[in-house]
Amino acid sequence: MSALLAQLRGYSRLGGSGSELPTTAEKQQQQQQQSLIRLGAHKRLVRVVVGLGVLCFLAYTCPPIDKETRRLGGSPGFYYLENVWYNNRTFHAYSSLPDALPKQDETLSALGFVVAEHAREQAPDVCFAGTTLFLNEGAGDAWSGMYHYYHFAAENVLGGLAAMATWAGARDLVLGKGMGKGKHGAARDRYVPDQIIVPWDNRWHDVYGMNDMVVEGIWNDQHLGPDQWAVLEEDMEGSDGWIYFERIVIVDRWAAHRHSPQVEKWYKMAAGIFEEHHQPHFFSGARNRLLHHYDIHPRKPSDPQQIVYIDRQNSDRKLPDATHTELLRQLETFSETERVDFRYLKLEDMSPRDQIEAVARASIMLGVHGNGLTHELWLPEDSTVIELWPPHSFQRDYECVATVLGHEYVAIRNDSIYTKQQQTSHTKGPDELHSGTPILLDVPFFMSVLKGLVRG
Image 1: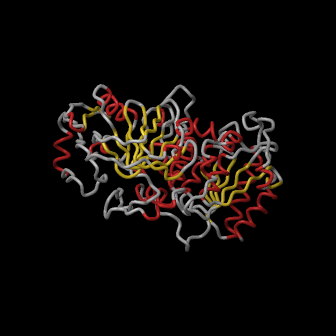
Image 2: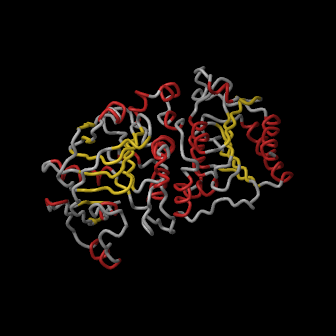
Image 3: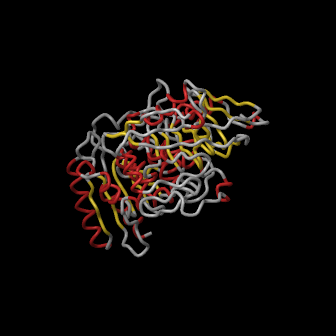
């Protein structure tokens, strides 16, 4: 995980043409010894323990940076800023028009956010070039959802990329040649951050390993976790050290809740940023990068349609057993008569990689409301998500993700479609999602809906 710190070489892009990167032999030699971290002009010595060994990296002095801070895009809890400094748990912005920048309460929680009219003249000690995705969840004592695949990937990460896609100027970014390429040569994308920092909550390593899959797949080794961030903080704390971010998306759950009516209504932290205007296909770069990293081939136009059914029968939120059996029978028959592929997934029996591969070529993904539907992140953009609901329940977890990703979303309650208009005006009813009551489904009605979707 320390590879990102290894490449903090002043104000040159990570992996770019600033300072020469060490050869493979040099890296191996460095990894066999306890090496030095040089931070800025202070030349302080720090040892970073990662996993079982001590890895090394160098961060050279940054040049003076006197550019004003700009708000590039985003919304409360998901602001996208340019030219931001950090020191002693406080972000610093500089602008001759301070009212044009977001307020602290709109930006983050548990940390400081200071806006001044004059920029610093002293060079920072560490520079993060390009765009950094900074997930501030867990900075204070408030509840953190970082341990959960949906909250981490579909809210924090997807919401952060959606914030980047609200900036029209991203289309004019000049991306360096050959820089930031992943394991399989996936090119840099203007809507994929150059690095991700998860500074506070070690629980982001979820028990199923999905969050690690997401971070490694999109950013390879260009990420910092709480342990590596703590090294920077500890080293800076007693010596007035400063960190500079060329561009940064600060993601903060509770800032979004405080200032977005949609977030408060639905209790979904990214509901507000998802409703902002975005550049089209903004998530395709991240999706393609992850699929390339794990050698997963996406669906081709010539491939037959594929239906994926996610089974939740081992949970307390499930179909009646007889209904489940009949649904499987009819889906298998339908796949033969309509010449479509059908895949039946029991996610608990599959590795994280196999789960993603199973949905990456799907045309239609269906299942009872649950965490497995978070895999809609890896569906092609022209796919359909069908979510099965109890009679009085509805939440926007997977609907808002489907909408921002360009999927068609269909909510079914037993023998009827819960329309978009009904979803928008929904008010909270009985909590049937956690009651253990089986979810009824009229299978013939469902199959008629499915047939219409497949036949177009």
